[in-house]
Length: 191
Image 1 (cartoon, rainbow, N blue to C red):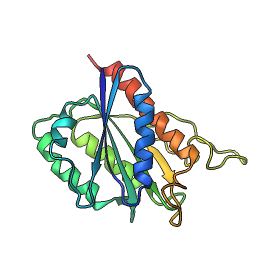
Image 2: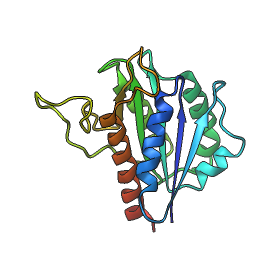
Image 3: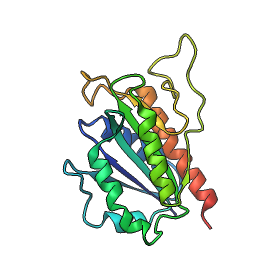
Image 4: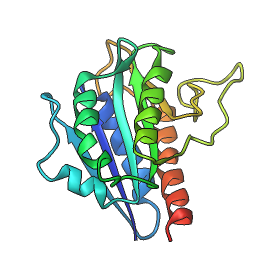
């Protein structure tokens, strides 16, 4: 059994939709248990969340990109995760990340880089998307990895789009594929 936790914050519902896509991809793999751990508006996780994280084989981080980085609510969780760091409770677990913002670029990579740094503080093994970008003239939002994310799954949620409208199909499929890849690699690394 591979156990995966997706720990994320969602301000307007777009990141929650992306987290659910990652969950679908991970849960589609055989013998996999996936936990969604949503950070609330005050930056708090459910009471036993740190213990849940310590029991996982893989942890996938998610946050919208606000002003060039993760939301403060995610940062509050990251700071609280020092309780796990002191015990090296996440060491050698697979890690990955996803984010979205309203613009095509939106400095999303800064958020992914933040997740990577957090994972390295914990001694985790980072997994990127492993996907080629959709970079042809006829490529668009319905295509896998249209945003061209290699280090993590990136999505575009226009500022006037509801969570029902965005992220779009290609970004959600990219998130699903990231969830699948995390499980596949966690299975290979599990003793």
